[in-house]
Length: 275
Image (cartoon, rainbow, N blue to C red; front, side):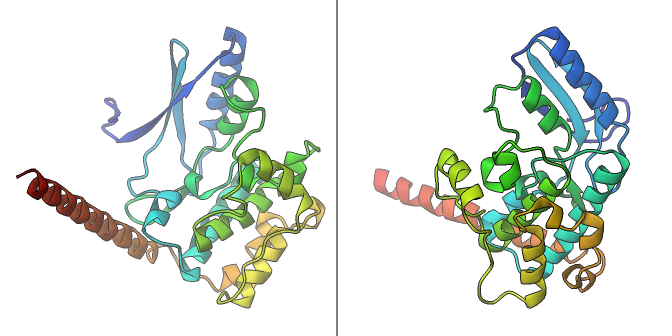
C-alpha cells in the first residue's frame, strides 16, 4: 500500500480478532507503545486501524521479503548467516534493553530484507501480545519448532527465550528447516523439552558451532545475552556491512526467473498436448 500522506510504500498486516472491545483496546494501546520503538534494525509500527473484527497494522515495507522466502532458492552459506544473525542481535539488544520486549517468535519468516540489503526484524511485541489476548490461534505464542524448552513447559521465561529461537533460526537458515520440521507440531512440542539441543554437523566452522551451542544451552541462565553474543568470534569475523546480502537477493531473483521459465515450458507442453 502507499501512504497517501507521505507517499511511502508501507506494509499492512491484517489480524483476525475474536474478542471483546476491551481486549482490542489493549492491543491498540500496545501497538501505540510499539510505534515508539525506533531502530534501524527493526520494522517500525506506523499505527493500526480497526475494521470490524479485523485489525490493520501498518508497518515498514521490506521489498526483498523474508529470509524464509529467500530460502526457497537454497540454503544459506555461513558468510550470509553471520551477517543476518549479527543484525538480528542488534535488533534484539534494542528490543530487550530499550523497549523491554521479548520477541517470542524469532524465525526466518520474521527477518526481512530491504532492497538495499538491510536486515529488519519484524513481528515483535504485537505477535505475542495479540496472540495472548485475542487471536484465533493455539494457546502458544509463535510456532513450536523455534520455541525454547522453558516456553513449551510454560515455565516463567525471559529474554533468553529469544536467544534459543535465534539458535534454531541458524539451523533453519543453514539446512532449510528447523529441527523436528517433519514432525506434527504437537509431537514437536513433546520432543523439544525432552531432546538434547540440536547441532550442526560437518562442513560448518568451529566458530559457528560454538555460537550455536551458546544459543541452545538448555538452562536459560546459561545462555548469553544478545549483547554478549555480539562479542563472539563468529560475529566479530562476519563481513562488514550488509551489502553482501545483495548477492542473496540477486540469487533469489534469478531463481524466480528460472521458475517462471519452467512454468512457461509447462504451459507450452500443455499447449502441445491439446493441439
